[in-house]
Image (cartoon, rainbow, N blue to C red; front, side, top):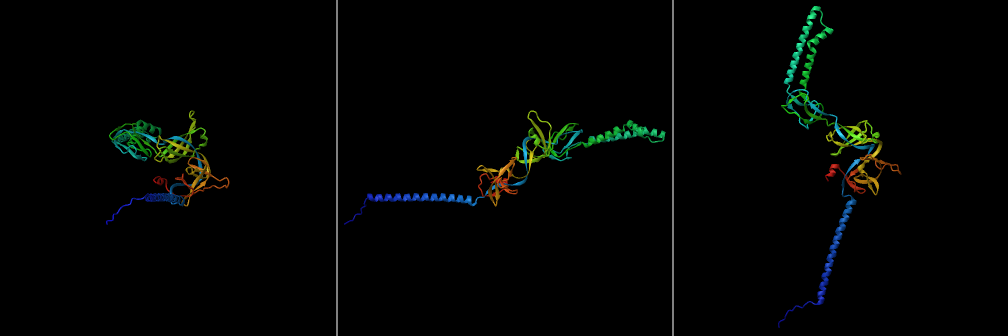
Length: 386
């Protein structure tokens, strides 16, 4: 008797059971994935909150020191830069050029040789003048010896003076001095310290008297003629401070002094002119236009912060003061400002000024800071590289 193995087809109840198990497993896996995602997001948020609150992220910022001193209010204007020394060199002698020692753009010092002229012709002129002087002396002797022998006395006074003139002694002496001066001028030198702007001659060329040779400009001793509106003129004082800034390099200002206030006011522009003198820094050049801040009013003995340090939160002005490596905001009562610095006034309730001279306030990197945020003071250039 042979037994047969047969496969029994699955019943409907069995199929329903399998389908239910699959649905339960899928739901469990989905819930597990969502729980892991929520846990990851919660962990990241907790980590971010911990970093912000716990101070693990230190932000680079730039600070400046609060100072106590005068706050200078100013009049802002523009002016043209000029040099106190711009000279066009001209030949005062004649001869062939044998050496040119400078080129345009080179710096020179007072007395430095620029051009040499062949001196041989000038040396001969000196010898001729000396010979003419000796001839004049002999003529003088011829004129006075006879009179001296006849009278038995030396010729003096008016008679001697007349004899010198007849002999041509004065003319011979003057010619000799002129020849020596021409010889000295064979070497053309710089009249002051400056920069060569132009050289118009070359070796081998023959100079003539009055010929233009080149130009030298003094870049150190500068003056700026700034236009000042007539209603601002009474506030400008001779000797007052001036801050000059070139548009090309606004971060390199130089200081000057008001040297003069010129008397005429332009009837069209209603502006007068103030002359400012300053020492050049290699940036300002004659012909440039520059922005100028002229001292108008000086407020003495004030607590002053950089104007860039003052920001607003909820409509209230404040500054960030660095203490113990953290930026703490301090509400202030700002007073007058000149655009660069702002005075801090005392609190009307307490009578106290909330910042003190020597405190460090932030001027860069502070716009989005929160109170008590950890910071690291860096130089301005260093922060720019980060």
